[in-house]
Length: 487
Ligand code: NAD
Image 1 (cartoon, rainbow, N blue to C red):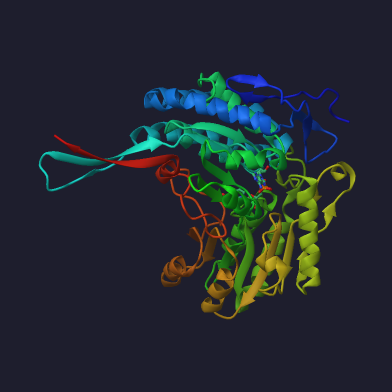
Image 2: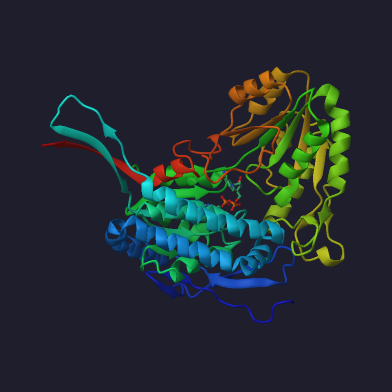
């Protein structure tokens, strides 16, 4: 055992750190070594959620009337706290989620930047004025906050996803109840702590940890909740979307099965690098990760050789070690799921040409490590070609023509991100039109998005209602009122 004394962390409700009324806790576990317990967290129940929502309801009138510059000052101060503690926070993130500590530090700094970005953008987010024929009347729209917003988030970007939801919610005058993933509650708590230290009034942000089965329903169905912003699996997103009341807005950012197309003129070295970075960084646990490579037949052999070479160079290990590129999967369920799909790939007749075995020797014994896997000869209708795996598994599918590539790329229920590798401008441009994806890239990885550009999916990757990120990321959190002012 690494940890002798495990610290217990509380919920944050109405400005107080408090235990759950259930008096029960659960552990957050280090996925690189499951003997290492990161902390004990409140196993909350509906009574805790009820209290958190009531606190958010009470805080709303005053917070929605607070000057935007004061709300912005709190976001900026919280950003400074994250920046000042970036090294320690990155270490906690790595210990809790497994990604490399350099990636974790980038995530902490990106989250701070997101708070600063919305502190500025949110202050100038406003309505429009409409010309009309009456010289004694002004017609305009006002943007108003919605009220209480539930924020429900996954473990893979456990700080930056909450930041990109909570910052636009707060700056526009909403109050928040935040439930993080039970795999990464500590780093989520640190964001709430930073906002509390920055002086956010009581009840404006509330934090409740626990199982979705215990707390999820009320966060979605409580009549005072005016909006639910969720990132996670499509299954959970569909459940939440179907349960939310008619008057509750939902924003669902869900799964992906992202393709990268390798054309006959592609720079194969670049293509292989993009697939390694997009498919295997963060151990394949990015919603925009490359999981399908659709390659023109004549390029397949040389491309796969390069892909194997580059994958072989990836060091597997603990995210605290220098040079490690493949960390553990985030939890045991994830690892079992990835190994299950590797078996499906073999059963469905694909060729496992690299990796795919669990890594259990020595220091890896207590962690959730799996070698990155490359399958070739993947049939477009097989399970590894159609279903989200959310791990380091890349399926290579051969096609004869660009038209076939598009048909295969679009023949999935997801539409989050896609890329093409080509120097042919005409094909590149055509691809941006033909592909069914919310983010389309040319000669870039399927992963990664700017904080100032819209982000979201098509088809079952999103509710396709409101985008996240950028200026449009503020729209979800406000409602329009049209004012006809005669004088
Ligand atoms: P998950 O759906 O299991 O859980 C996400 C969050 O929702 C957790 O906090 C969980 O406790 C909660 N939850 C689950 N079921 C719920 C329900 N019925 N009601 C209310 N809350 C519920 O997802 P995960 O395993 O944490 O994350 C991986 C998934 O997230 C992948 O499918 C990935 O593609 C997706 N993801 C999407 C994006 C995006 O922006 N599109 C980004 C990151 C991750």
